[in-house]
Length: 221
Image (cartoon, rainbow, N blue to C red; front, side, top):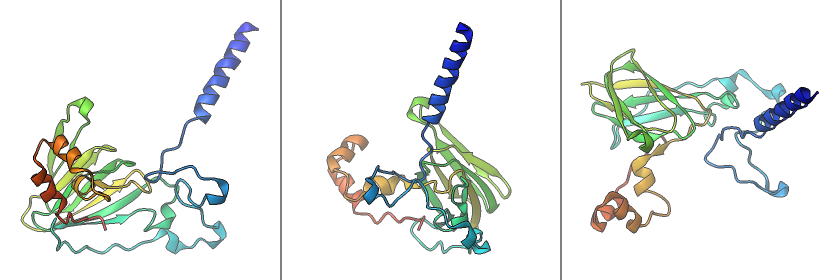
């Protein structure tokens, strides 16, 4: 009988641990709200199934204009652009690169990325966490090559070919988020204190002032 009680206790503990596990967030934050103030959910509200149409699961993506300071443009197909992705845990993006175009160092806080090159040649890489020694993994990719960027790690792609390049990135979240490192540090709103940035980068204030005055184009719009 004692063995039975012990097993029941273990099962109850296991059940409690499993049921207490929080789901992965689907946006940057989800602040608890009082019932009368609650208007957002962790993700999106669901459309009445009777009102769903084929168009909810369809989107056409055109090549993007790369005439910008980075020479690249990301066209996201996340839940905001394709409502049928809601709750499915996947999304994708098309990335167009002009010659020497760069998709600058950035992270996806909520998604792993798998990228396939459709056209051109890309130099790609990611940097591991501090605990792993900030190791850099890089590879030159050609048409048909695939590379994975683990969730949350800083990564980039540079067109090293002589012509345009195109890639498709699949992501393991309906809303993976994008944090472009330079934009986050030098285009924060309101700005990060120069005292913080000069100390972090070990440079003088004039350098930080110069960097904060730059436009820092966002190629994810």
